[in-house]
Each structure stands twice: as structure tokens, then as C-alpha cells.
Amino acid sequence: MNPIQLLALLFFTFLGIFFLLLFTFTRSDEKIIRWSPLVLLFFIITVISVWTQYIFLQWLLVSSLTFVGAILISLSKTAKSVQTAWKYLFVKSVGSSIVFLGLICILMGLDTGADIMIDLRTMISQLPPRENLLVEHGIFFSILGYLTLLGIFPGHFWVEDSYAEGPSQISSTLSAFNPVVTSIALYPFLHLDDFYQSPLLQMKDVILILGTITLIYSIWKFKFTTDIRKITSLIALFHTAGIAVLMGFLPEEKVFYYVLGASVSINAFLFACMGILRIDLGARDLNLVDRKRGITVITTVLFLLALGMSFLFPLSPIFLSEIILIRIGLEQGKYWVVFYPLLSGLFFFLSLKKFLPLLSLSKRRFIESERKVLDLRVRLTFLLLFISLWIGVLGLYEFLWGGF
Amino acid sequence: MDYYILNIFYILFTLSSLGILIESRIRYQLFFLLLQITFLFLPLFNKYKYEDTTFWILLVSILTLKGFMVVYGVRWLHRTRENMKYTVGNWGHPLLFVGLIFGIVLFYFCLDYLNQLVIFYTRVGIIYSALNIYLGCMGFFLRSDWISRIPSFIIFQNGILLFVFELADQLPTGLEIGGFLDGFLIVTTMLIYRNKILSISGEHK
View 1 (spheres, rainbow over the protein chains, first blue to last red):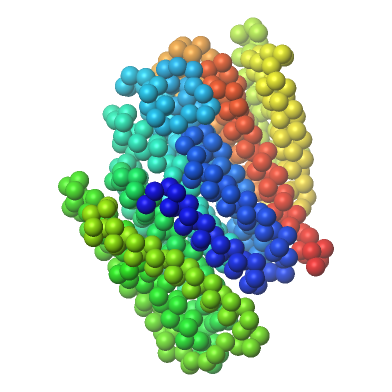
View 2 (cartoon, each protein chain N blue to C red; view 1 turned 180 degrees about the vertical axis):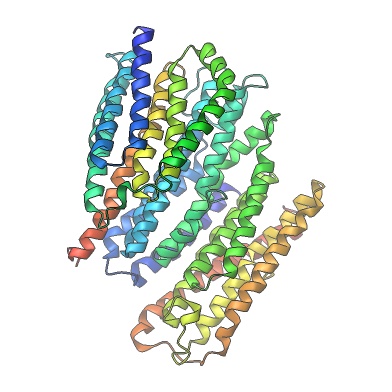
């Protein structure tokens, strides 16, 4: 996948989410049409950020996404969502500051006077001879800051609440677009680190370790969670950590963009299904489900399919991403890479254990008061499912014909 | 400007950060914040020329985003909050003391490296900006409530801005905007809380 294909995928996914937001917003009494320009702005910033090559501009756009995202989370208008929005804003602002500090150090260490519109290639050509502490620290700070913005350990604790407390459409937007924008901004720094070969610390190894810790954390936290929203957030966190782990292997650009595309389509689909399940169940906690209320077949099937697509369903782009990860790891002689799909399998079976009891609930049609909203939600979710499957099939075709 | 005078101002700048960390009453925290923001004008006047547009942009940004928005915003948020947890410490002064000891040890080991930087770039402000960034980080651990961490973030950002001002002639113009993240943070926080207040009072309906 190339940047243009990724942008096309972002566009179609955004369309699905945007329609869900405009026509099926039920989280609060907020007039969502008033806030829709802000969601549009979020998407436009995402597109520019994916398109641009300038490192400083990317930082500026990622930081501005933080401010827009925080306001969007608070649209739930509950006390918890406001606190969460603030936490999201604060932690990500600290992350942005750390990246900025890193950028200053790198720009200060360049041989010639740097221009503010500088891309990776120009930066590498202006790098001083080896053993420059300023540049090394700059790369370290930048990557550390971006990892906080991505939601990787130790800056992971904003992810769970932020995705769980916002409206499901907003969580869908954030979980789909935020990892893409941040990863694309982080990617040049990993190449810079690889080019510079710092004797102090190899940041790709650091990312691998921190990504693995985040993967394990999300599984561990999942085991004790019964809140549907939090469970979905933890799956999104697992996907983000997966992207970080892949970046630790320094993949080719087309593989990197494909995995980002996989994350976009699956996270959008997953959160859309979660929204339907939560309304249809009438509860957000699995322990508080009213068994007499029942559930519709379509909701159960969609959510179980979303779970499968998130981990091990053969046509899922995530499943293909795992196969690609194994191949890259084996090519680099890192045989322990099979550990990651095992983690994915473990997460999948744990989630089945939590959600399979839904099948035993009595079956019914949508409740009359919710029918209009849920019908529309299901239709739009099918669009997101189609996009996910399309990405999966295309990837599989490319993989089988040696494209990756 | 005379090296010694500059040094004294930088020491006062750092001491005001310490004041914000130690002080738990909002009124005095705001006083120290204003004092620190006032000290930011010194490197600005020292490093930039009046003829440059950048100088005026930065002057207006410090006055509005830091001088007005930050101080007004912190005060507004303090009043808006239903509970008054604002100044309650997380670990209180024992952690501050531990942090002080840790900081002294850290700076003792980093002194050679920092000295190399300062000699190489002949900038004494770098040490003070590093100290401020460290004190800002300390504040993140000291306070229990998310809102009460704002002054610490402002210290952190002021340290970064001082760093940028010190290296003004080596860094590209326009990069200074990164030092004003705290201003944007305050404005967004006010928007978030405003939204909640309006919803409670029913103005959105």
C-alpha cells in the first residue's frame, strides 16, 4: 500500500464514521451538527499529516489533533468524559513537548543552519559526523514523545479511558486515525536512528520492548475488565502496540502503510460494532446484562465477527499483518517473533470466553424505540465491514503474488 | 547584557519554579507564575531585535498566551471546579525532598556534559532551562489531581521556551511556537469545561 491508497482508505472509512456520527449520535443531548466541522477538521489535519514530509509540520499537526480530539471526547458530556478528555489532553501535551525538545536538539546538532521545513532526506544529509550527543538525545526524546502520543508504555494510560468514555463514533475516529498520524510522524525518526547507529541506545530495540510490554498489559487488563467500552479500547490498544512492535523491525514503507491501513479499517469497524452491542444490550457492563431483555442475532454476529477480524479471522487484514510480521522477523533472524501471534491468539480466546455467553441470550428483533438508530448503524457498519474485508483480500492477493 | 545580571535573573526564574512547586495556595502560585512569565521577556529582549517581526510576534504571544490566557485560565479553572482539590499534593513535600536529592545527584553526574554544551554554545541559560524542565517533571509526580498539574506543565514549557530563546540564532524562525503549547492547553481545557458547564445549566438545549 502506498500513501495515496492509504489516503483513499482513510477517506472511505471517514465517510462511514461521519455518517454514523451525523445520523445516529445518541450519547448525549448535544447537537452534533454543530460539532461536525470539528470532526471534519480532525480528518483534514489527518490527511495533511499523512501527506506531508516535513518533520516539524507533522509534529505541529499531531499536536493540534490532540486539542481537537480532547474537545471531541468531552462531547459525551458526562463528568467522567470531561475528566478523561482533560487527561488525554494533558498526557498528550506532555508527549508533544518532549517531541519538541527532541526536535530542538536535532535541529541544533545539524551541521548547517536548518530550515523549519525540513524532511528526513535533507536532515540525514546535514547530520554531523557520528558521536554527536545532541542529535542522539534529540532522537531519543522525539521517539519517546511520539510513543507517548501513540499510547505505548509508559504513556499508555490515556488510551483506555479516552476511547471508552467518548461517544463510540468519536472513539472510532480517534482509534482509527490517531495511530496512523502518530506512526507516520514517528517513522522518519526510526530511520534517522537506524542511520545514525547511536552507540548509546538503539531505539528500535526500545520500541520492541515497550510495544511488547503494552501488548502484555492490554491482555492482562482485559482479563479483569467487564466493561464493553473498555474491552474495545483495550483491543485498540493491542493493535496500536502491534504497530509499534512492527516498527521495531523497521519494515518497508509499503508493508508499514498496509499495517496502518489494517488498523484503520478494523478499529473503525470494531468501535461501530461495539456501539450497536452496547445499545442493543442496554448495558455497558457484561455483568449487568439483563438476560430477559435478550439480544438480536445481527448484533451478536457482527460483534463476534469484529472480534475475529481483530485477531485471527483469515480474511482479516490484521491476520495478514501478523503473517507479514512473522516473515519479516524470520528474515531478520529473530525467530522469537512467533511469540506475537501467540499473544494475539491468547487475546482472542480470552475475548471469546467473555463474549460467547451472549449466544445464550434469548433472540429478538430490535426494540421499537431503538430500531431506527440501530438499523442505520448496522447498514453503515456493513460498509465498514466491506472496507475491512476489501483491505484483507487485497493484502492477501498482494502477499500471495509476492507483493509484500 | 552583563553576564552576572543575566545569571541573577535566571536564578530568580528557577526559584519562581521552585516557589510554584512548594506553594500550595493558588493565589501565590499565580503570583510566581506571573513572575516567571515576566522573566521570559529578558531573554526575548536580549536575543531578538526590535526590527524583526518575530520579536513582536513573540512579545504578543507571551503577553496573550502566557501572561493572560495561562494566568486567567488557571484562575478560571480553579473557580470552576466543583471540588477544591486543586492544591492537594499527591505525595507532598517528602517526595519533593527525595526529588531534590535525586536532582542533585543527577546534575552532579550530568554536569560535565552540561558544561560541554554550555562551553560549546556559550549559553548559560541552557543549564537553567534544563533545571526548569526537571522541576516541571517533578511537579507531574507531586500533584494528585490532573488539573493541579497545569502549573507544573507551564514550568516545563517555560523551560523549553527559555531553551529556544537561548538558541535563537541557531534554530529556524517559527520553531518558537512549540514553547506556547501550555497556552493552547489552557484554552482547550477551558473549552472542555465550558462545554460541561453549559450542559449542566441547560443552555445547549
